[in-house]
Image (cartoon, rainbow, N blue to C red; front, side):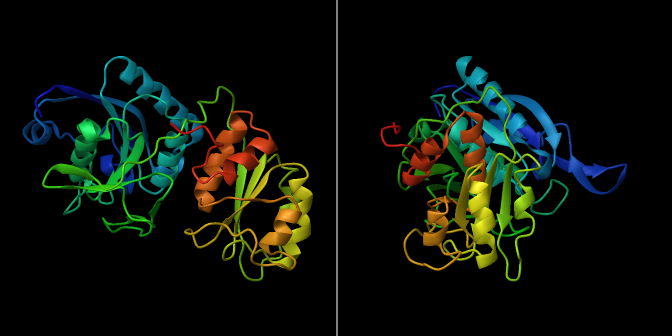
Length: 336
């Protein structure tokens, strides 16, 4: 690497920075990611890293307000000359974090999200390799307009497709359509350049509460009538198969959809939400007649992230419908 590259490293905590603590058993995120300066200087000559810790929290403590801070900090770093940004975070919510950042990131520089499945105190800790891989992607000329991607276990994933499919293995992250690219022998390979979409924008106001419920056999849906009363502004249903709910859910969902947007995603996590296959009470044809909106190719977690950010930007029901109807998640004409 001949030219000098500066990468802004933004750390949020998570397993990649977790260490034993005096307060009890287990590990907690420390003040920063593991010190890899010697390795980085040897493996990536010409890369300058400026590190800033925005949080020291486990995955479950990350929220939309923290991600707003990540975007603001990252945009400022790029404005000050950084060629790319790497964000380290916990892996339990990494797929949601990456997708939310993807929807809000507008700067002309790559933003790479990574983490670790094994903390630094375990044999075979994967954090150092993942961080070096993320830095490689952030500084490779081929990724200058890649937008937001996830780098884990030498694979490069698109945020809208990546999923964590194992609780502890280092190869936990997969994409149904396969990874966008990979890293081998220190070289970044992109199989297909991803299309960058115009971001939804960085909301100024609060992020509204959006509920996520999963259908299950024998669940009569008794929680449903209370969702609007307790202040939820949106609802996402992970429906069985491609979009079926128990018949007892249909009427309550129709009532909710008269007040707030209600979206349904397929419970399997891959494949599009169906639109026109199954009839009957609670089938996807019936749900749409009752005002529910299919979530396209997104799983329930990412549908909730998208709906939250859409509502925070002031989107009305018509814009929400148009956004979900478009295969690249944004209304026609928004791609770049």
